[in-house]
Length: 238
Ligand SMILES: [Zn+2]
Image (cartoon, rainbow, N blue to C red; front, side, top):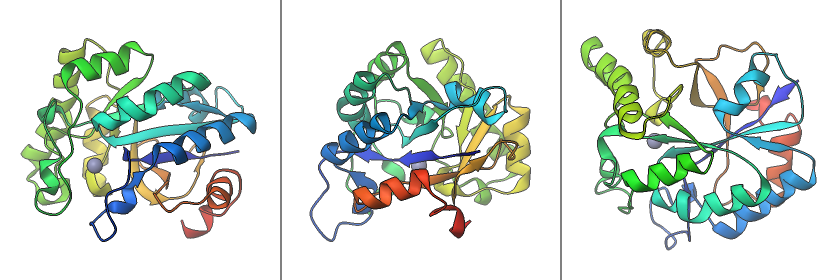
């Protein structure tokens, strides 16, 4: 049983041609079509929190994980209503030190976009959605000392939990960069899962702190989307 975990970043009108990382902005129309298609095919879209029993083998069914990296406000504006309409849940991985800020880690490279404010995060969570951690500063973990990497991993969890009064049990490695010692820290911090940018669907029993995902990009067309979710299309690249 293979479980696809979808990786999204922004759900918004894509910037003009030629802008860097334009490919990571999926249009609201495409996102809406993708969710509708999952529903029609009998899939349930689930947050990492709700997907966990399936990953551990305790439950089985036609499920798809839905994740958003970075915590853009456009996730709340453009994805949340669609998720709710289909009865789906999703995890959004927030950067705890940049609540209400912008994607400054991309400064000078990518268009600046607002990240969710505290109020936005509260609304996201109150709507039944899951809050995950993406470190305190969108850290390049592999370039940090052990002490600093630990602080990014441990403190982001505490900060998000304190700010929102909810449990934060799921982590996502910024840039997909990590080494085995970081996976160990994530485990020690008490996160149940951690997602990467490695391509492929997840198999029950895979290492929960090194989960593969399926990137959905601006250019992912309907046929590719269906192949990514329902066939071994992505697994071949793993
Ligand atoms: Zn990120």
